[in-house]
Amino acid sequence: MPQSVPSFAELLDSAQHTAVHLEMRDAYGVAGESDDFARWKDTGQRDVDAGSPYWSEWVALIRRTVDRGVTVRRARIVSEPVSDYIRFEHAGTPVNLEAGEQVRWLARRRASDIALPGNDFWLIDSRLIRWNHFTGSGASGGGEISTDPVAAKLCADAFEAVWERAVTHQDYKIS
Image (cartoon, rainbow, N blue to C red; front, top):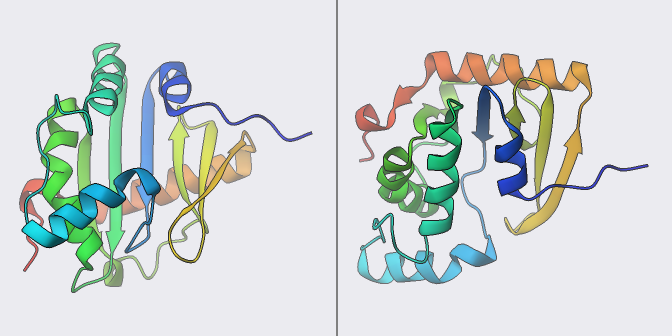
């Protein structure tokens, strides 16, 4: 029987030590970002107000998680030159950092010899995986929960290999 997929708040609230997130797509078409992405493409301006309606719920969740002593890390594998969507993400990352996440970027060409899972994921305490599925156009295809120890080890090893090679947000320059 498939496990129910907890909300991100439930997922991060369950973390005791670590929450890591690996993103591997060059574009996402998540409905909740579409207006902000379109505005950024039109104006070049990104909402970086941690208290804005766009960010406030996520910022509160990350701060609450980090304040409990949980380390939250996000790594992004990106093709270069980067897509417009990655430029959009990069422009908003200061809010992730302000909330308490650590963020690093890895050029896809530097990830060629890393064994990577087939989907983006969150890994909680090296044991609970939330697979993030996406359609071909980047829309959310739903999440899936797994506690398979072999898959969790793959995710943990992949994340650490990416993290070791990746550069901090502050040092990752988009040309």
